[in-house]
Image (cartoon, rainbow, N blue to C red; front, top):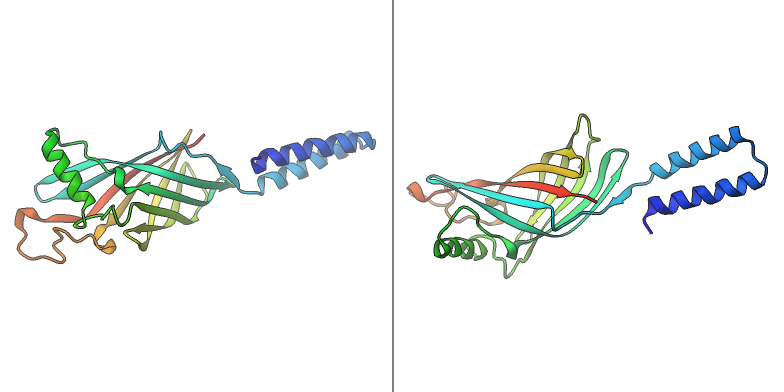
Amino acid sequence: MNISVYKYVSVYKQMLNERKKGLTMKNLGLLIGTMLISIFAFAQDVSVNTELSELKWTGKKVTGEHWGYIQLKDASLSVKNNKIESGVFTIDMRSIDNQDLEKEKTNAQLVGHLKSDDFFSVDKYPVATLKIKESTPFKNGFAEIKADLTIKGITHPVSFKAEQLVNGYKTKITVDRTKYNVRYGSGKFFDNLGDNMIYDDFVLEVKIITE
């Protein structure tokens, strides 16, 4: 049973017991208020809809850009006092696709390259993870988040601003791929790339849908 539901049931049962003991309505009200405060002092687990949630990636190069989606495999999220207490998001790297290339052959070549050892080595590292470590309370719909991002078995801290939605959250995370041993086409490690250079940063536009 969800912890918040369990606590509500406990409150109701105690209310009935105290009424049987002849507790005055004034004191009963104080009891209810105290117990409700204790309920919301606990972090509440939030259910994440992984099918409706979206992770859009965008990578840029000298001559243009490409973009596509990656599927969220699993997620857990805990919220307390209008603040994200913790969260773990597992990303299925094998699901990476491309949405801007219309020719099937060219599209398949790019996706295959992204899955290869030149980039994300998805056979060796089928998942990436984002683990929330710290968050400010939401103020005017926004909060500052600190997290650990793991790609190809390598973990580095990331920080970003999250926006609170009616049914979830959204954010943009800028990732320096070279920190995760994704160096193909990087001007940091290869000279004379010219128009073949790929910028080190890529962007993840994340929309998390909760239930």
